[in-house]
Each structure stands twice: as C-alpha cells, then as structure tokens.
Image 1 (cartoon, rainbow, N blue to C red):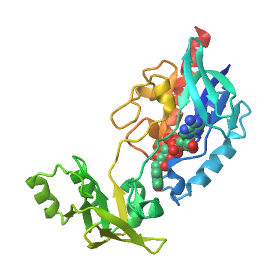
Image 2 (cartoon, rainbow, N blue to C red):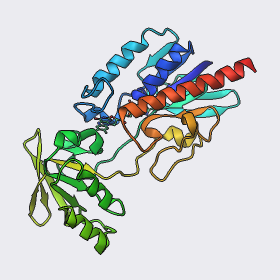
Image 3 (cartoon, helix red, strand yellow):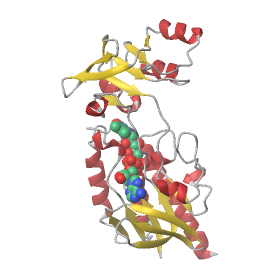
Image 4 (tube, rainbow, N blue to C red):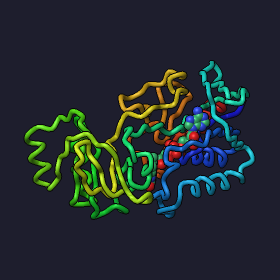
Length: 299
Ligand SMILES: Cc1cc2nc3c(=O)[nH]c(=O)nc-3n(C[C@H](O)[C@H](O)[C@H](O)COP(=O)(O)OP(=O)(O)OC[C@H]3O[C@@H](n4cnc5c(N)ncnc54)[C@H](O)[C@@H]3O)c2cc1C
C-alpha cells in the first residue's frame, strides 16, 4: 500500500506530487492526459511563467518530479475508486488495482461548449471561459458575453474591465433581466441581443463576427462564456463526496472533503479556476495528507 494516490496530472496533481515527494512519501500519480485547457495557446497570470504554453508547464513539472524516486507517474486513467477501512483502492483503465492510505483527486473539470457553429473552432483563441485568463489579450476589442439567466448581467458588466465595447448575447435563452438591469447595462454602453446565434465566423485564426438567426451580424473579437455547471469526475460520486450545484466539491481547510482521507484540489474543488490556484490547492492537499499520515504513524 502506497502513502498517497493522486488522480490527475494537471497543476493541482503535479504540485501535490512534488510536495509529497519532498516529504519522502510513496506516491502514484495517474493522468489520463485530457486537460480542459489543452486548446489554450498560453497560460496567463502564472507567477514567474506568465504566458507559458500549458503543455510546457506540465512538461517542466513532470521533469521536476523525476528527482523524487518515491513518486511514480503513469499515463493512465483511474476508472474506479472506493474507500476501505485502511484507505482507498483504485482500478486503473489497464485493469491494474492499486491501494493507498490517502487519495487526492485533482481531475479538473469537463466543460461542454454551447453547440453553435464556430465555437469549437475558436475555443481557446476566440471563445474563452475566463476573462481573468484571456481578457487582457482581448482588451479594447469588441467582446461578447454569452450568458443568460441570473448571471447574465454580472458576466457582461465584468467584461467592462477589459473593454468598453461589450455586447450581451442571450442566444434566445430566458434572461432574468429586470428593467433596472437593462437600464444599468445600457448605462455602461452594453447592448443586449436576445436573438438566437447562428454561428461565429472569423479568419480561422481569429474570431471576427457573430451571425444571428435573423441574418444580423455583430463584430466579435472574443466570446466569454458564462460559468456553467461542470461535469465532475465519476470518481467523486463513487466515493460519496458532496457536490455543489456548480458540480465542484465543497472542500474545507486544506482541501479536505466529507470523506475521511480524501482530498480534492484544483478546478474540481473551487470556483476560482486559475493554474496557480490549482497548484496551490495541490500543495495544501499534500500538506494535509502528509500531516494526517504523520499523526497516524506517531499515534
Ligand atoms: C481554454 C482554457 C484556458 C485557460 N487559460 C488559463 C490561463 O491563461 N491562466 C490560468 O491561470 N488558468 C487558465 N485556465 C484554467 C486552468 O487551466 C485550470 O485552472 C487548471 O488547469 C486547473 O488545474 P487542475 O490540475 O485542477 O486540472 P487540469 O489542468 O484540468 O488537469 C486535470 C487532469 O486530470 C486528468 N484526469 C481527469 N480524470 C482522470 C481520471 N479519472 N484518471 C486520471 N486522470 C484524470 C485529466 O486528463 C487532466 O490531465 C484555462 C482553462 C481553459 C479551459
């Protein structure tokens, strides 16, 4: 039985493995190799590594782990996980079974795009999920907030941090905009278009305009999607972990969960979804796992 199994090799899982390796813990890190930001060309807002391509961050983190001989990394998915009296048992996609005293889930999130022609083409370089990550590179350009329901107003107003040319597109969905909300959006120069979107067009490299079902067009350098509930890993349900209505795990201090010995770090656990935050949460989960192991061993 190992000390810790880590599921997921993004910033959260890799940083957890690094800290645990430095604590001389025996660790197995399994990664299925499908990170949510795979389409992104750069990772912005990363301390000392601003703008580094995401795969480069991973490659460097994997190279750093090679120094720690108690850390094993395998490129394989974990398909089942269960809690036992002594810890956790997991099944890998290749059929192997492994056990550990603690489990860290760092599986990120699965994000579904609205099924609009062109959104998948420009995903990561014209269609974005987070203005903190990609707003600056699209500053002062025509921006579109793709949003409906109660969060629509907030998503559109948030984009005024990066541009004064903001349009709120509801794509014919129900909005909860009151007259007061509409006046407020209008006061900030934000047009509201409630027609269905037919497609996003561009030059292949850059998005340029939205085309609506009625044939109207709107200049659009970048679309920012409203936060939508994301699909958590199946493992989280298998382990009986609580979930928020956003599809993330409500963690306590140091990424603890309602399941003893189980920690959830990174995008799978919190609302702030930045690479550095995921890495920091991985470090906190590792710290807590190591502390629990130590307490058990010296009791
Ligand atoms: C398009 C896009 C652009 C972004 N740009 C930025 C940016 O510029 N700056 C920034 O700070 N943040 C950015 N982010 C957010 C950032 O990528 C995430 O916050 C960060 O990657 C989260 O790290 P993580 O380790 O939690 O998850 P991830 O990086 O998603 O890694 C999770 C890993 O777990 C693996 N996995 C999942 N299930 C299993 C399983 N069952 N078994 C084994 N492995 C599994 C996946 O294959 C994946 O490799 C962006 C996100 C997106 C979608």
